[in-house]
Length: 105
Ligand code: FES
Image: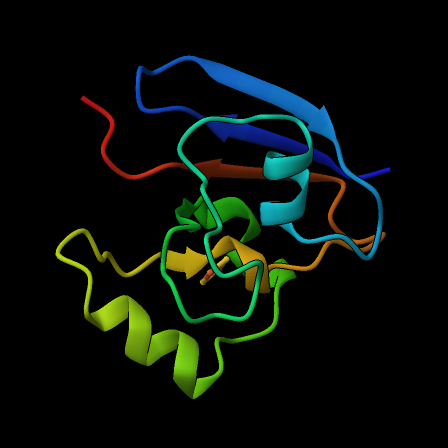
């Protein structure tokens, strides 16, 4: 099962097993990871699941669709490795994934 490391805003980490086929967002919400609110439920329309994807695992995921890119560009916190975690679906190739929740102090 894929292992996802979530780096929280306070700098601490949560390391979770998340089922294949689930999104990084679903893994967070299902385990009460703070900082990923997912207000729209995963339809790429709210931006509250924004994460920075570690360079080491960016290639594991499909490129963002135009609606995801458009939404991210509206965020002041956007970086080159920004993604909506509801669009990051885990598979067997994702043995280890690391994401940082924006806003870390
Ligand atoms: S959950 Fe709303 S954009 Fe991802």
